[in-house]
Length: 393
Image (cartoon, rainbow, N blue to C red; front, side):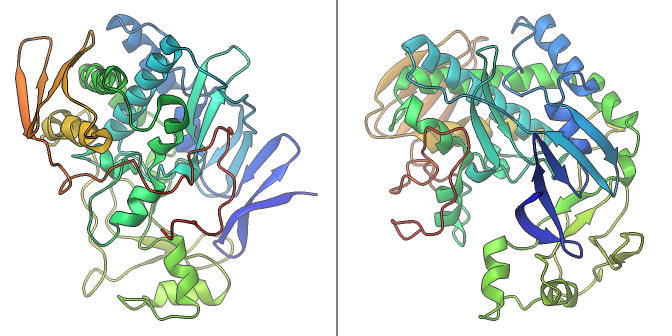
C-alpha cells in the first residue's frame, strides 16, 4: 500500500511512497533537471566546472536519481534517495563540507531556487562515499534573487518572519558537522566556494539558458507560488488570518487541501486549478489586495541580470553575516578569498586584489543561523518530524 507523505493539494493529491519509489502527483521537471545526473543541466554544470578548474565532480553533491514521467501537469515518479549519515568528520572532510555548502548556496541562489528550509533537505553520503546535500522537492526556480537568503538556506531578516526564517534555515543541517559557531577557516572556505561558483555560473550563463530554452514543456510546467506558509493555512481553520483569505484560498481549504498556486514562464498571473482533472485554470485578480510577482530571470537575456552584482557582493556579506560570531577575529584565508574581522568591520579581499568592506552588524540584512534551539541540527540523513519546538520558535 502507498504511504502518503506531505500535505494534500489539488483535489486530494498527495506525494506517496511506494516501495523504492516516490510518487509525486505534481510536476517533477525541475527536480529532474537538478537531481538526475545525466540531465542536460547537470551535463552543462559538469563541463563548466571542469573548464573553470573546479573539477568535473564539483556539483556531485547533487544526487543522481532515476525519474519516470515529467508531464507538465500529471507528475511523475522519483527514485527514493538512499544515503548513509556522514558520521564523524576529519578536518579535511569538514573543509570539503563547507565548500559543498558554498557551492550549493551559490547554485540555488543563481538559479532562483527557493523554499530550501531544513525539512526539505537531505545530507549524507552516497554509495560512492560522496557528500550529498540536496533538496527533496524543487518547485520554485528562476527567481531573480539579490540575496542567498531568498533561498531560505540562510535566514531572511524580514522582521515579520525573522524567528521562523532563522528556525527553518536550511544550512543549519550542517552545523552538527561544521561546528557551532563556525570556525574562521571553515567560514572562509564556505564563502570562497560561494564566490567562485557564482563566477563559474555567470561565465556559463548562455549554455545554462539554452538548456531551459530547449526544454520540452518549459513554458507549460508550473512554478509554485507560496502566498502563505503551510502553518498559516493550518491555523486559518480556527483563527482568521491577516490579510484575509482570498476566495481561491478559502475554496481549497474548504475541500481539505493546502492551497496551491503557481505561475507559468512567459505568462502573467498567479494561477490555480479549478477542476479535478487539472485542465481548467483559475487566475487570481490582477487588481486589489493580491500578491505581486517579481519578474523571473530572462532566458532571452541568457539568464543575465543587473541583480547578479548584488548577489555576488552583498550576497557574500549576507552569507558571512549569517555565520558571524564574536569568536571570529583577525584574518582567515583560502585559495578563493581572504576575510578579516575587526570589532566593527568585515573586509573581503578577492584574488584580483579587489576589496569589499561591510560593517559587521548585518542583522538588518540577514539573520543568524545560530538558533537557540537544535531543531534540524541532527546527524540523520532526513530531518525527523518536529511537532513542537522546545525553544518556542
